[in-house]
Length: 247
Length: 263
Image 1: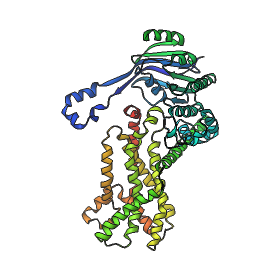
Image 2: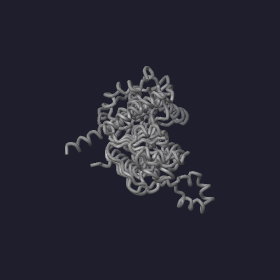
Image 3: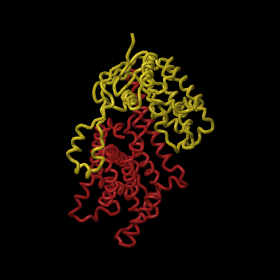
Image 4: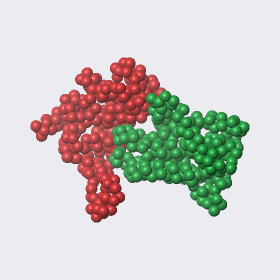
């Protein structure tokens, strides 16, 4: 009965490095043999043969060291990146929260940025307008909402960004380490909101370095090590193993 | 069946909202914290007109009645094109976070940029009217269909160029310099500050037919000054625009999936 909504089928992702010619034509020509060689071979392997599935309504955590390939996985899920091998299948409306406030403009007010961000993230104008008051209330920014956001602190920016996201209506929510900013109270609010999403049946993929947060919301966890999937399974089990290798 | 249609409608609505909101943002941001705001979008081409008027009318003494209004009728539409094209190399580069982090139709970014310049151009048409009156001419009824027609053609052309330049510049950054040189060169090769009748006979065909912008710019000027539209010029400019647009779109679709990787 379990219905997979995200499927990774032997997914590889290579970045061909584009630095060869950006060094300049002169450099390129003077080092022609090695430059040509580097075009052929210099590939950065970000993900190697990864297969897993995420089921409807499930919350999957992704953990691993910096540079292991966690963000690349989210990029592939959101459709910003394309796999170089294998297949990525995503069913449903995805909201990717890879960076809070992506697309905010510093000269616009908080209110204007809510509209801008909401529409970029996939809402229609009418929908944002309908939810505007709710979003502003959630952000707890008070009078600052009509100030240009260049005067905001980074914590306030995070609040504004998350408030917009909290009012999207996605089938799948992708979240990348966004809770690192903001004060404790706001972090709690974010987690609560995510639990609420989870209860309403939203599938969540959550990348984090905070084992606490992962334990709190994730049913299963995927451990990425050295660009491939090391383990996937029940969150507690994976975290125990993971913390062993780190210690 | 119905659900399919609804989905399509919702997507269309979202697409339209994206265009509106992003264009509005460009308009708002452009003159934020300036004192004179919109005046600058008129002051810029007017200053240009003044420079050319000094150089060609006062100093070089070009033999022509109403050279000032002639200049303005050509420079305003040109300004739209050159502003949009010159801003193109930076469009995707200055939106790194949205491109890397959010999956949305990126081709709207250059469109919003072009639309914004188009609106500034529309807002500057009253200045052209003012100059017409000064020279005892008046707007013509043919503007009602002529302006939307040429607007559409130039939108297609400018959007095509913008898509092309903004996409390629992510991979080859040299294009940024080349664009600046290119628009300047094209400006002098296009009959904007001189009438096409003054081009020496042996270069005439070259300047009129090989330059994709000549037919469009001549059409604008004729429309503003005399209220006339030459069908063959319109057809030619439309053909060029369609070609440039399709080429730009093709390049964009070929490259766009790699945007998030090279930024």
